[in-house]
Length: 201
Image 1 (cartoon, rainbow, N blue to C red):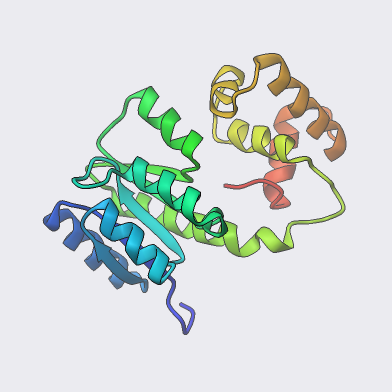
Image 2: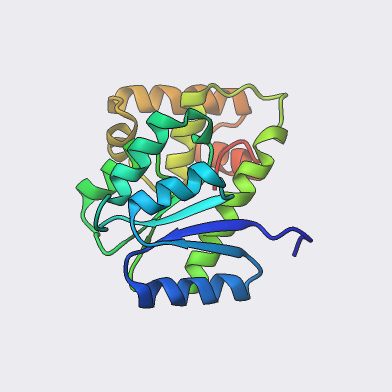
């Protein structure tokens, strides 16, 4: 673990769940701050931005969705701060709304702490390596986005819904990326982009 621990702000209104998360993440070497609703969380982020935000969706005073909307509107400089939602909601509409607001990931309750730790590690590392992505292959933002979602197992139709694109446009961007990566198939393009850190995990 680095000498300076990565900081995580956990925003969770259930005190028992919050205590378990704090204990688990502290044991894994993170510095954990707590807030118990979206309003407290927003103030905490503005005062002392963490390396990652872990937020419940359904909370009193201000929901996780509203928090992310207000944070983005108030402080665009925080747009690259990893934001992971904790949710008991498994419905498609809620997940889509979260992605459209800029969420980086979802972890479903009851929490599997091994999964949570893996998600947090991947999201923090993504930010750390964003400045050193290879520059020889110039993928456009839409090409990176469609590749990323395809690597996560999303269908063309689902990628289109998430990004607000038609299925045909999604296929167009994936094919452009494939040609730039110099491989014959989309599967090989996904592998090459992931190994080269050209797309997010």
